[in-house]
Amino acid sequence: MTEHTQNTTHFGFQTVAEEEKAGMVHGVFTRVASRYDLMNDLMSGGIHRIWKDAMMDWLAPRSHQRLLDVAGGTGDIAFRFLGRAPGATAVVCDMTESMLVEGQKRAAAADLADRLDWVVGDAMDLPFETGSFDVVTNAFGTRNVTRIQDWLNEAYRVLKPGGRLMVLEFSQLPNPAMQWAYDRYSFNVIPVMGQIVAKDRDSYQYLVESIRKFPDQEAFAEMIRKAGFGQVKYRNLSMGIAALHSGWKI
Image 1: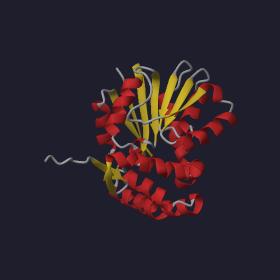
Image 2: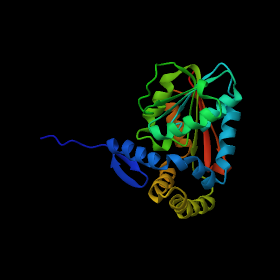
Image 3: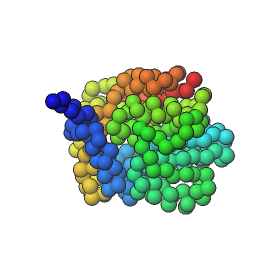
Image 4: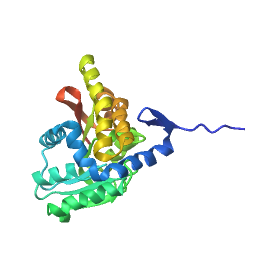
């Protein structure tokens, strides 16, 4: 009798079956959706806004472009992109419908609803035709994907030739002492903050653990190359707390 070997992955520091992770991640973001943007500001002291602006500076949006923001949640990246390129359009794709609902409220308030589409979908199996977008972005969502290489392969597929991928994600500080201090803050402060503000300590414990499980800058850059991208580069932000990764479909 042949035994079935179950593929596993990580959910924070837990080892779980691959088919279970998506549902667990969906649960996390469903629970925190209404407080997600507020918690981002509190956890980072607002620095995430500077990082996202740096992402736009490097991306340099243009008015004719069509953007796909994967795991785009409440639309932070799409709003910034459209703000810099008045003639551009964008699609926000996320597996958690409640996050998209929060984003739609913001879009209506900002009079951007006619330039934005919101699609429930899986990063590893994007519901879009090959060569549909000029730019694909992801901000702080890659580490939540079950099979990161599959998502990067999909990003390559849906981009037009000459299109660009840009990923903003938490990363690793090159200085061990600084990494130690950052870890102490992350593990001791952020889950408590999540309990007080979002009434959900466990979800923020997972988010902190997921940062530590994410590949370092060089390893992630190699995964982007493996998906087929050329001219792959990265830039550290705040000394490596986060990093921007860029690649082109050449």
